[in-house]
Length: 337
Ligand SMILES: NC(=O)c1ccc[n+]([C@@H]2O[C@H](COP(=O)([O-])OP(=O)(O)OC[C@H]3O[C@@H](n4cnc5c(N)ncnc54)[C@H](OP(=O)(O)O)[C@@H]3O)[C@@H](O)[C@H]2O)c1
Image (cartoon, rainbow, N blue to C red):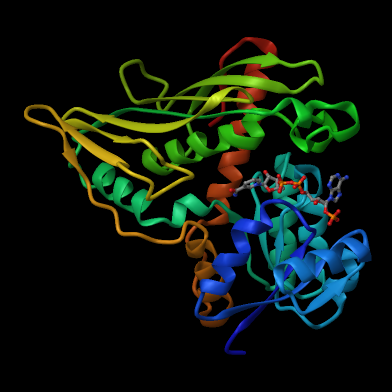
């Protein structure tokens, strides 16, 4: 195999980000789209110029026409369809959040072991040079000792996506809705990347909207049982205007990212504020935001390399989210290690 043949499992909005990345990649080609409705798949294939269509997800998985699948389903369906794909011998790039319980993550990992296919969580920003540079700055000691990581991902879910007859999947509790699952996982996973692992304790607070999911979530995380060590503060929202940032605060200075997750390359992005002296812009090489996760899959499938984002890290993302929700519910700190 010299090229990976990709199939899209569903006609999700997020496919629009993956399609250009697959097409920009050296070793991937987009060959198929599947939908619960054949008519929908056909219309989608015409719009996006995709050669093959399937009127059921399983049909595409069993067709022998694809090597890898991109799963952009609502959150509660990630596990079922990732496992079905693996059992059909198809490599899987699954959207975040990977799963909604630790048992589900373990079932995914077991299926990967059993089938020998490649399985990865689709956190596109982790593969972008900006994130890697921020990591190098933090891990090389350039910022001194890291004391705090702060970050947010907020956006306004518009009224038309709140209508009962067109309710956004993010607002449905049974679908794994909620802003922490949807976008809070971005600053959460960034903090985990910088701190080198999950927190030892968390404290969460949430505001629950009328459909029963968290529409504002604030989390405090500690990286040691002792006072005076490092912390992270994250927040997410469906109720406030679009805003993202990450700030990595060290004893020698701080690194501030205005666009850590989306909209990269649009203007000023990463600034170093040293202990003394003027702020310095940190240059970031340009790269299509979703290309890195696609190329990473190609390297894993075609060259046998381990995925850059290891499944243990993914498991720790889920573990931390679950602890934060538990804390918000009980209003008590939860110790997770
Ligand atoms: N990485 C990123 O930048 C990013 C950005 C946005 C979203 N996401 C993630 O991508 C996933 C999809 O988000 P999205 O906004 O693209 O979702 P979406 O537009 O609502 O698409 C979800 C798709 O799932 C299929 N589906 C199957 N069962 C369904 C059900 N019971 N209800 C609704 N849809 C169902 C539908 O496709 P068919 O009708 O064709 O079967 C639908 O088009 C989520 O996990 C989200 O967290 C990631």
